[in-house]
Image (cartoon, rainbow, N blue to C red; front, top):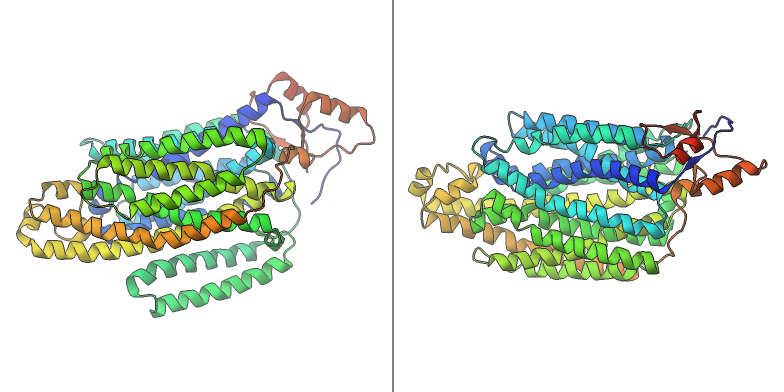
Length: 563
């Protein structure tokens, strides 16, 4: 890495600057969080209208796969080049893909644009977490997790409600689930452009393109193997070929990483036991929780006869659980610096919720479903931020972005595997049972306009008379509830990992301060200037607009800083 000498001062991380940057991050995260939930209640209608019921899982898998592929790239490139431009690129990609999805003529194009959305969403997720670690010490980071948790919690409610409203509306339709992202994305881009004042670094080391390629091949072959395995059989030639590609690409990735000057995923991270346990824990929990959340709204609409909007209301208890536990645990973590106890408790609650969900049936009372969601949300609120916090706190400040992306990468690999395997089990069982239900009631199916399982929408289920409607409801119940048992052993493993997590004392220094890219006050900057023997850090600051206070502006000065 090269640097050009200059007398320009480092950034001053005043409270106002931190809050302004944090506000810009929330704007980007809001867009990504809302999109992940807004299509959940609209999905049965979307796949029914576009003829993709049997391939429903790809709506979620495409997004998660793309997100997973780019996470390590965003993390490493952020460490090498700075995070502001990358953050704006991620917002731009997400917004453009939303426009494409809104105009998609068929199911294949919709899946494609969902994948492009994932390319942007992965950057928003990783860069937001890394930037927070850059500007806030680990010990104080917990209080910023509260607003983030509330944002994702509220999105979990607002998304399904808005998606349900669009879907049930006779004048708007499900395509507005994607149209709505366009103005939100433009607003988030404007806020990010104006508010993100962060270092931009110059790097002269060669990029690790070979590692990006081999890791992408490994991730894609793994996901495709799990998806095809459920439909063609786990011993099919397609699955065996993909597993062979997976093994070869992993071996090639390790060889390339050992020789790379700036590896995308430094193998040294895996010699850090705290990082390894935190990452494995995130992967196990991601495998379980995403599987449950992805298909529950579909189940509720079909088996309980709820509208898209009303099924979204059932996410309110989960939101309440997330906000309650993330806020209360954040206060304790700030005061004591202890986070392991909450991680263990979070996994235990998620495991209990999953066991409870195995009892779901078509006649399960709505208040019971709400209680299940509250328990699941309470567990998620205790663990989802603490796993990332443990990983970030266990590595040097120079590797914050890489550690964040690697931790999230393995969590998303778990999520992709979970959704692919869980979705395959669910849809394969569902297809068989729906076929039996329709074959047993052919006249009623024709009268209700149900020509095949792939074109089944919630309104058709409501229009179907008895006994066809009950047969369809029973098919969904019989297909989904038993599949939750497959997640229980994984969550038991997650609980053991949480118990094995070593609690490292939380740092009191922000990442940018530790790397010499910033100081925490004007007094520190004055002391730095007063010591002529001190080598001041050299940075390029990418400015957005007049959002900084006077002290920060004076500290930054008129000159540019380079790393």
